[in-house]
Length: 335
Image (tube, rainbow, N blue to C red; front, side, top):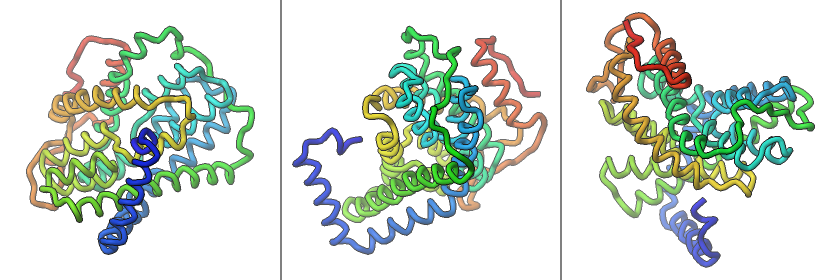
């Protein structure tokens, strides 16, 4: 995204600098490459690949019966890579106008449930319930951040029917092949920017807080892991920051997958609103979700559950989203 806007000499200089840093610090480059591969192998692929296959198969099975709302649900299940592919396919098939494609991107671009609930919540923060809360709140923030554009839109895309592409995949093998392509794009960007991060720290030593912010600006999965290792409130709100910012890696993937006619500027601006809304909603809701309590712990920097009570956190998030979508009056849904 950034390199594409630079002039040819500046791009050439950036690439030459990156190559020189690799030669000057091969150990740091190898460390960054190894960290990126480990993130992909143990965190990203187990969380993302199954949903890539499921979303590709669902898009093929429903085909022309899939509505605009159904496509949005697939985006929420598959995450930003699936969202970008669906937007690209529907736009190229002329099933979406440019404005409709832009709004689908704003509403659907998010981290998938496999990553947020399983990886961030279950593995990094030690609470699946907390992961459910974060996943629901990021979708709510997607709606909040897209409200300005939705109010200005003259096309009622929320009730429009979106037909599937005339060229559907033939079977499960094609769905898996599509999932592999998406996984390669995701993992390639993660490895590259993890190497950039390692090489940058080699030459520009930063304090821990600064290094985590730099990591968040580059790549979301590694930054979430770094913030989770910090422990306490920084672990919770830092991972929320990462999910809002997305990072240069995600924007690079989106630029590679989306049609060239679609600008990423509206999405970038909406993430600023998303970041503010996410921080505020998490501060409000995390106190009332049963089974989740913020603590400072020395157990490898985890946010852990200190009590358990009914109803389940997923039910609370569901009610919260319903209240937001139907513009109901604020209520307390916790016993």
